Length: 231
Ligand SMILES: *Cc1c(COP(=O)(O)O)cnc(C)c1O
Image (cartoon, rainbow, N blue to C red):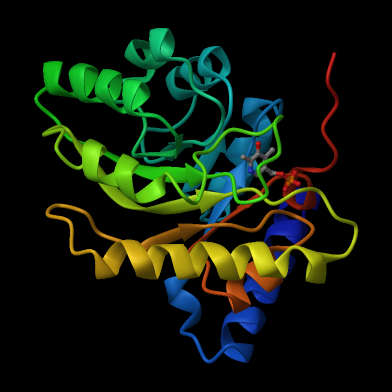
């Protein structure tokens, strides 16, 4: 058994245990295999074990991999996205996790509209207000949701967050809880066309705490594919 195969089994087991601890159905939680900087062969190994959702951060890299890898893969875009690059990924990804401003949502609307399709998105919230991270503030979230909800070719299906980096997963837990509370507030506002069915939170170091707090999508990279090397 290859290393990625072993890691995948272990992560799936830990995900299921975390869901059960929280009284949740493990099927409610899906793994986004974060494959940025990793070669197509690594993705192919995980795919051969049944993994279907892969998350990428860079437009160029994503576009190359889409052409190279099986059509059955469900690609998610999870990184910072510049409006002038949206056209390159239009129709190629099934979910964008990182929408944090109306101008970006409008460009997604324009590009998916040109294909006659609707793009599902999550609104990224920067709960910790770290300047180096994307995301709208908690305070501006509801106004942004209302504005984006009016776009005909964009559908908001949930929220995403990335807490500050901690060595200790328990320190990330309050940020996960806050995201769930925000999603309940948005759901309570009953904005037409908006669904709050996804909470994208939790990474290699803290996905179990995120699942216990309600995550439906966990984004796991290094625990699955090994440490990343940037050149
Ligand atoms: C890289 C990345 C991840 C995965 O991080 P790991 O710690 O390697 O699991 C998750 N989410 C986002 C937005 C990322 O950029």
